[in-house]
Amino acid sequence: MKKMILLAALIALSSCKNDVKSGENASSEELNSENAAVESEGSSEIVTQPFYDDKGQLMATVELPANWHLNNKKGGPSIFGPGGISVFDIPMRNFMYSNDPYVAQSYVQNGGKLRPYSSAADVVKQDLLPVAQREGSKLISVTQLPDVVKVDKSVSDMLYKVGPMNQQFEAVLSEWEDKDGNPYAIVVHLNGSQIGNTIMWNYYCNGLNSPKERYDSAKQTFVTALESMRYNPRYFDAYNQSEQNKASASWAAHHQRMQSRQQAFDSQQAAHRDKWEAINQSSMAAYNSANAASDKNHNRFLNYIKDQETVTNSGDGKRYQVETGSNQYYVNDQGQYIGTNDPNYDPNRDQNVNNQTWNQAQKSD
Image (cartoon, rainbow, N blue to C red; front, side):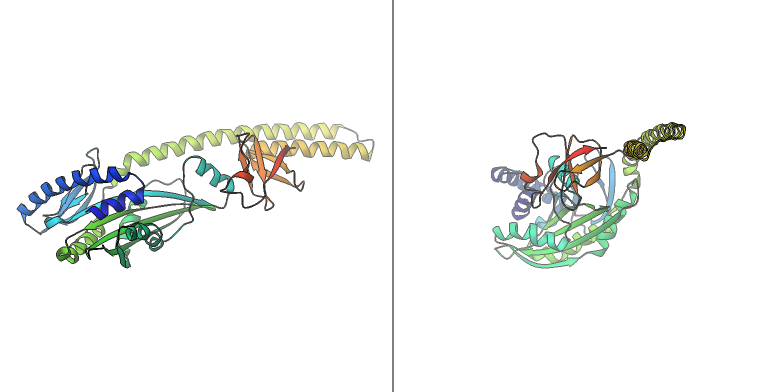
């Protein structure tokens, strides 16, 4: 159990060393009392057990031996089995990666972590392995779990989505051996969602601790339990209704805004057309001057409708369309831009995006 708590704490970066130790002692006492009750029952018959959230709502059911008990309380193992078997949950970690510097910057400024999308096997090697090696453990094997993937996808299928997105799911069983030769296992669940050029992804883990003599059977029970998880569709009703309400309100506001803008645009265009039809151009110079003014008015209204502004790159004089909402814009030589309301922000000094030159862009007609 000690190695799993250390892994969970170090990987999730959720505790300092002293906190881990105090949590260890408390969990050991709880584990001993629970195991005593588990051992007294003795039945290994497979039964359906309910899994509740911290509010007492039925979230899912799982197939487990009768002498394996779910712990629906926060803290400590999530499952207890006979003879010192325990299952721990390692909290989810979330990441984002985007080719759009503005999106990436906003995510970081809101406390997010940028990281290119990776595979579950890479997570094992990049995140779990360094921590395990510091504790004297070694990686034995990594195995794909396609039936666990089906369960994870079934949860996503129950959730309301505003529109289609490209989703990927993966689950692997990583098996380890600590410095004393004792085996343990960690399952990594990974999920990625791509919209445009932005990928949001995350992973979380379940870890199995078991005495060496029970490990093989405990591992089989552990994996079978994850494959047997059946989530309650009604559990997600409140969430789905909330998301639908948000989407409906957002679309209604957007539709009203676009309708108002279109009416304003149509009126302006009619007035513009009548005005220039009534004017007798006396010279080519006068015509050219009026035509340039017309282009500017036309551009302003197109920007108004599209929620865009026109900016000019101070480096090369090229004009670009950008989303409104920022006081200042910077543009690189690929036409990518960063908008900011911070007068002190300069992407050329930002280590997340300063691998290229950013020129200040001025708003123009």
